[in-house]
Picture 1 (cartoon, one colour):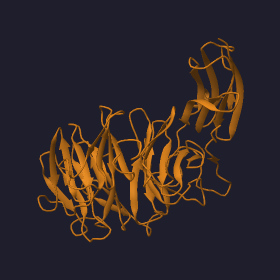
Picture 2 (picture 1 turned 30 degrees about the vertical axis):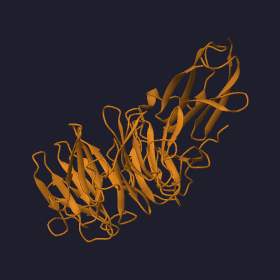
Picture 3 (picture 1 turned 90 degrees about the vertical axis):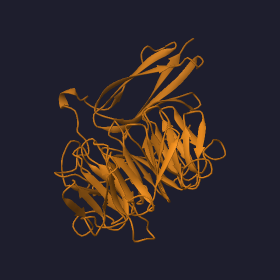
Picture 4 (picture 1 turned 90 degrees about the horizontal axis):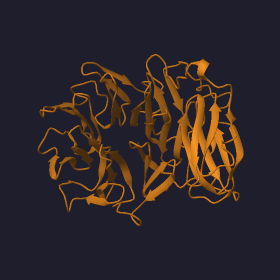
Length: 431
């Protein structure tokens, strides 16, 4: 039986945790010392549709945060290819795509894990920097050293400096606009792939202030926002490109940008740009006014901001080398629970019905607080044969079908784990 990922629950002195649905301080900072965060170097955070935050760390693996519970996936309890996680993304099916440093790409969903690397797939390099997903189900994978890979689920196509217009094999961010154009940031400029046509923008043929492209975002008006800069140079800045190709460059000399090394950009539902810098902290820009958060005027744990994710409640999840910060004007909202009249009285796992069954049955359970939930089926030897749920679930009563078409007659077990609650029951398949 594969070991279940460890759950971390806050202790009484971890004051950053509050009951679901409440609003408190505008800042919360998670570190290894006050939470289940497995490593303080947070590379990326992504929020799923169930309010879970999937957190990639450089050394601690992948963490899933749901309300006040942490679930850790690392090389000892899962098939994640490395604990050095550089990127995390979600496709339209909510599959997690986990890019690692030097160990390839892992994917994870309710059916289990898959790992892609240079030895078992068309992945051109095992250093995976980012993954983007287009509306046609194509996955675009940026690698550091191998160029750009296109993967349709079965077939691989690789673009590099030798076979395409890609200006550099060190690829970083990827963004896909409403016309299906692929915008690709590299160490040597910005490339755009439209159909089979390539165009490249550099400091020589455009207003780019630096050829190192760290982040690309597209706002609601189809403006392109580009983060540029390198840790080894003094250049860089924030670039806006309008649909009619008007360029605007923001630097420390002509704006409120606190540092010219711009690492990350996120855009909220009001159109404000949240900008992470490589030494100046976090800046907010509403196209007119700049606001800067740094270690002197806020609880930001580090002045270098790698990545920013904005969840459905408007919380900003801020990745740094010294922990994970969460910020929201008016107070952070960790979770919004449904009306209590719909909440079950506690945690419970019911007997499946029908039982005995052939070949399908249903499993009911209830949870009384938002939790990361796993529901697995095992054979009599303890081997896991099915994962029915592996995600954050809100308060409620649930019914999950289980089909045993591919199994033989016999006794099986199903186990529910939700936070500290764990329960196992027996089911009987009769052919």
